[in-house]
Image (cartoon, rainbow, N blue to C red; front, side):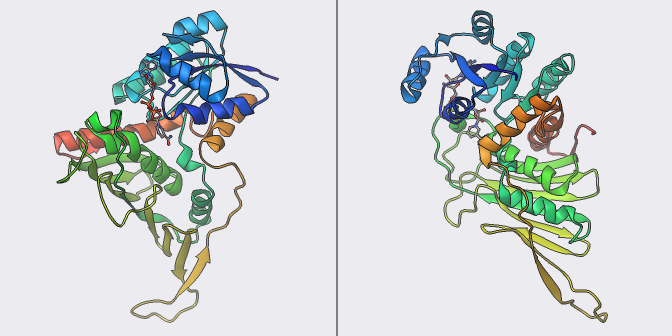
Length: 341
Ligand SMILES: NC(=O)c1ccc[n+]([C@@H]2O[C@H](COP(=O)([O-])OP(=O)(O)OC[C@H]3O[C@@H](n4cnc5c(N)ncnc54)[C@H](O)[C@@H]3O)[C@@H](O)[C@H]2O)c1
């Protein structure tokens, strides 16, 4: 059995979910904390009753502990440095989204990872690991609504974080929309080829950068996906999973704040102006754990089985491309082509 000696890079708000997961596993041990601030590591040790040593760099932590796995839970602008140090230090890597702070950085990381096929590099996409979205995916995959062709997601939340997000140029697209974009790829079962995006910062926003966006993506199976999102929208909030409508050739599926279902054209009807519909509930056949634990289970399982994880860098680069393509489209005020599968 592989045993994992883990360097936990980043001891901020998100770190505890990763630390708790590692502590639960019998085959894993956290051997180092890396953070810009020693005080952050001290706080993590106190919070979890640990006495893990602190290092100022991932390189040093790997060298001194002989670690074989890095958890990167630092801020997006640090992911490239941390990921490079992890892969060059011969460690598997599990990273928080987004892969990096720019498409160029993400491509460079993908190129580096491709030269090290023995190492597993996966990205946290916890919002794929939910019973509802798995049921929705199965409903769409069953062909019940026909071919999905027009997919919409509405995301409206007033989120007062404080911290790094308030200062980012594109907080919604960089830090949140990656989840919804990645969910769209899972639901549609295809990859994006282009995007047109209008990004803006609505009146009354408490963010320095653009906290709202409208995007139109085209997918390689012909589907069109539109995204309306805001992180500074007060009142009538949607869920964090967004509100979805998936229109296909035979019917439409819906996922809002309730189990997904579809309305499909009832069989054997006379031709008429508007058809009768049958309601189909989404099947709940997925029994994994939800959220971070589910995604981490899959990442570790992939290492055990010697296969890429569902959210490996090679898959996740398409979700990453949606993020940076959208930002580029908004800046250049034109439709942008994305990387081809
Ligand atoms: N998957 C999710 O649902 C989800 C939710 C929240 C945050 N996140 C992601 O998790 C990551 C961390 O977010 P957070 O909310 O914990 O941020 P945070 O600011 O609370 O913590 C980040 C920590 O990283 C440290 N850090 C910064 N640069 C570093 C560097 N170069 N080397 C080592 N440490 C460094 C900071 O000192 C801080 O302690 C981000 O990528 C964020 O997008 C994901």
